Image 1 (cartoon, each protein chain N blue to C red):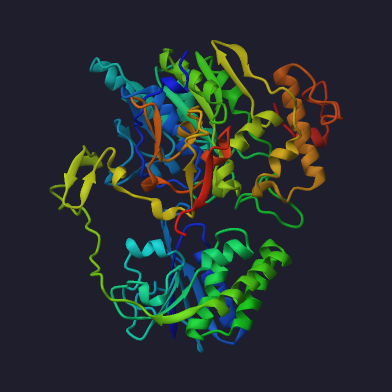
Image 2 (cartoon, each protein chain N blue to C red):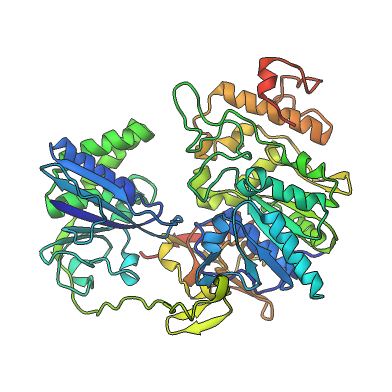
Length: 320
Length: 299
């Protein structure tokens, strides 16, 4: 197992790129490429990563880099890998797509590559909205979050739908490796990238990447906010290897989701009722994920036994 | 018609400043429009915004190319951008700087109003967002809008969006800046040369936009060429590491999104390359032994 000390000094994603200060995507990309090494070819669809990483004729990547349209990360990775194999080259084809390019627009292409079990590495940089085009709601946007397409009004405040359960969609393709990562847990992060690097077949790494302007937060808190997300259960760290799920990090004590929400301007408008709704969603997720009830003082309402307890309330909350 | 061009960095509120100025002009019974320049702006990258003020209807919808006044929200922009391009000879420049007007080199002798807006904003608003502060200086330097109508516009615009208290504080920042602004004449020493650009002919352009590492008259192109893009101007704060306290856990090096913190394994040491620091402060926030402090970058 490699640790922070074993990573190389030089980075294949150079300094001087134009990401926002404190960018979670830049942090994740830099550390992923540190582990993947120079025998990697990168594909990035339309996203922030292409704007701040490669502005023609300049580029920050020191590995072969390819960019076309938004919706075809999976297909392009398949094509790249096929070409490398034909030429007899040992190369990792890695795609860095955003949540828009994975949850919504790139879903069919990703599904195709996963179904064929192509030997590629798919990385989803999940910042929970279309941040590059100016913060529009995506399938990955959590309940209650402000975006420009889910504004805060007098009748409806923020996004009314819960975060789409992408993990189960990806795992349903019976791929060899799926893992969730957070930049706030470095050892776990490095270990999972290293593991995905050495597995054959379709590997999916799901990275949680805070966005400073989109989440309306202090740039210094990028790492802190990912830690709080994990501690509150908004984000869970686990891996699924050949259908076997393994929890890789379990927070000692469940924290209230409010701690996480109040760090970010996009949630600050939320009413007590909305926070309770989101907390219930998290409690149920926690229950299903860690196979135990959440902290009693936080999850005072017992989550329904049946997933399809058909009330209007629960119909709206199609969580995990 | 009075035309204003705002030069700022993403996140400083140049667009808000342009809109607030337009609103102040409307309060005084004039016509005004305000709009930003659309590009792929990140937080901290140079941005543009424009305001036009007139006493009759305005039909011109183009960018402002020959402004009567240029407002610069960040003096680090002076090194990379010709902010006074197209400015009318009798025009005015309003700059956020700690220097006196006669120490500011604009390449031309121009009427210049100076305010240390970052200090005022940090003191009153507790954040380096200088848009309302610089508007106070604008009112003093040009006299196009009265400070009272500006305060009113700030209260309306900011109060509506962020609460009455925030509106009041921003109005106070504008008033403070109005009183502290120094007006003088700028220096004309430097020769402004436009930054060289790589402009290939169509025969030279690579097929399909494919690029290999290369060197042109305008600098590096291709993979890894962003290394030439120094971004130190983006930072308001920068990290200072206390070597005595540091335990070499390497967390700051791992977390740094820019590559500012450079690791030298042979010497077992870390180095800070401020050329690439945008001053996010993640390193200081995450240091487990509090060995990193954030200090003002250009104080």
